[in-house]
Image (cartoon, rainbow, N blue to C red; front, side, top):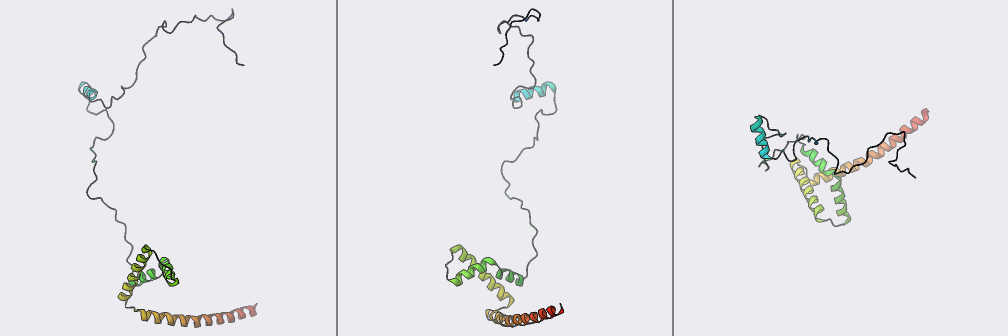
Length: 177
């Protein structure tokens, strides 16, 4: 348990003065206020009195006195981004043909799936752009098909030749070791 303090004092200890009520106590001095009154910054009369009485050249309020426009300007300045160098028609065509989304949608059409309206519109837009670029470059679909067939036939023969020559090189390497 905590010890309760008592007002009883030993004979040897200093004597405490008797208690007095709050109302009977005498205040030894008036408390001094510091700072300005609340809201003094916004009180126009007080500001005018200070300026005329003290002849202050400065406004006691801090901050900018410049008026701020509350409405947006009619034209908004847009930062210009540096433009990438223009791609040639061949580069654009290659980029469009290598697009993974385009390839995925074409595969879905070949499988017989139906596309939603957004995908269908995007696919048509891309295909018309490819056709336009092919016309500009003078490439026709027949030429493109012949080229693909020739390269496919050549590539199969070339792959077989590379495979056979690779086997010969492997045998030569194994014989050396």
